[in-house]
Length: 140
Image 1 (cartoon, rainbow, N blue to C red):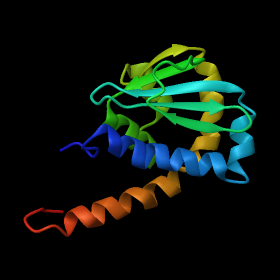
Image 2: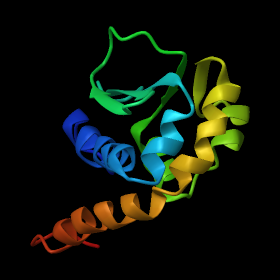
Image 3: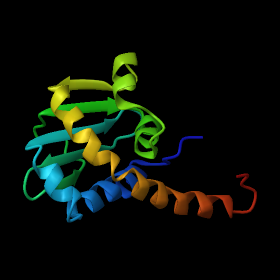
Image 4: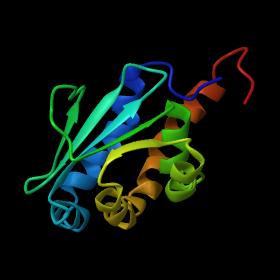
């Protein structure tokens, strides 16, 4: 069963942790140094997040019409795996699990900064997992 039930889930969890990183006093300025726009699109859900990595950093939900320097497309479960630290982005790009348009090297420079937000994401999704496992008739 996919982790995200809807595009709104993608915004809540992925968008939520990216907004947290954008407003973080350490990560926000590091992200702003990238001076680029990155679109993350899910291929299995109508979910599109645009990261405007300029000062001030902004995360735009369903920013379909916003021009992006780099676009990354993948299934929502792959995006979840990336943010959990279980899927290596470079390997996924090489295997065609993540499809990219634009200057991928620019996006890869931001990766070490985003990786610092992975623990926050794991904490955020743990709340959802606990809530789901507590439902009657749902196996953990």
